[in-house]
Amino acid sequence: MTDTTTDRRITLERIESYLPERSVRIEELGERLGLHRAQLGVFRKFYGLDRLRYDPELPLLDLLRPAARCALAALPEGGRVDYLAYAHVTQAVAPADVDVARLVGDDLGLADTEAFGLSHQACVSSLGAIEVLGELLRAEGGEGAYALMVTGEQAYSPVVQHVPNTSIMADAAASCLITLDGEGDVVRSFATRTLGEYAQWLELTPEQNTEFGEQYGGRIAEVIHRALEEAGLTSTRSTWSSRTTSTSWPGGRRSRSWGWSRRRSSWTTSPLQPHLRLRRLRQLHHPARRGPPGGRRPLPPRLRRPGRHLRRHGHHPPGGRRFPMSRQELILTIEKALGEVLERPVTGLTEETALFDELQLTSLAVLGLLMTVEEATGISVDPEALDIDHLRTVGSFADYVEAALRAEEGTP
View (cartoon, rainbow, N blue to C red):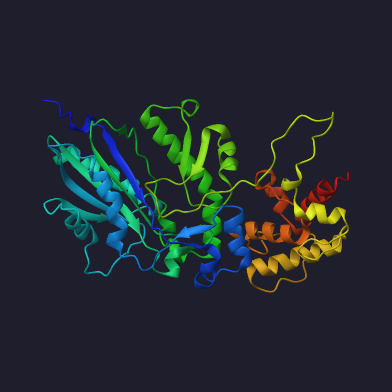
């Protein structure tokens, strides 16, 4: 007799999320997290992070309860929840003698439900929990069996709240009610790859963070392609949505490097990963409009950069530099910016100084450098137009800044 239970598909019957009402601006957390102005500026400018839902006085159960109750509301008459999985990113979310999963189950009136915690693969713990719950339902679930995935945690420590080169965590929760062959959205495939050498994610050295960032794009592409193959899909038929915390380069650059259309790619956060609060903010620009031959119409005054306006009237940008800027002044500006971003003295730079090999810049430090130089010179940097060759040496980066300055001034 053929066992057909393994052919039954996991379906997501209801997904709910919850955010605390209290929020704070990221600057309010700067001292707590040990972040200087340039680092906070990177999160604000390049990732659109302005406010965090953060309430240190909110009990963990009060954070988890609303989304879980809303998800349970989709349980049909006669249905029962056989399993409850509490998925969390941080290994320790409560004292060792506290069983959070059991407390959540009892709080929801699921005293007879088998409850357990799961933490694996960091940010995709919730997705892993859905796969585990699906396998349990296939192996042991009977007619009318459901499972509840609950995820969410609090940024109770600066070490947990700020992951260097990656993200700033906030407080949020989500829950998902699943079953087999239900009426909800079908989970067509699940693929994973664990890089054990980066398991100590909170304790990685700057060199390890850089190494991870360099191979991140290729690794995640391999996993996505494998998931597509298992689901019987191709990239031409799929709209891409990546759940990621890597800040190595913006998502549009990754999708192009993998041969995917940017219009079919979405780089954002998932309701099943509420602890991620970073969303890249594309720089404000006015849509291109047809104008006189060989050029575009000028931007409306409200969208013009203040730096450009001030320079045309003989004033100085916020950094206090005069324009035009000599090559030596520009090198000194870059040197000062690097010292601020790296939080150590940086002197004696030459045109040939290698930014990555000699100064060991991380991806987050690069963004900090771009933002700091923007403030000092008044240029506007578009990361999508920035190539790695622009950042190989101090001289190549200076060439890029000089070209941006000429473009801002409208000179050849």
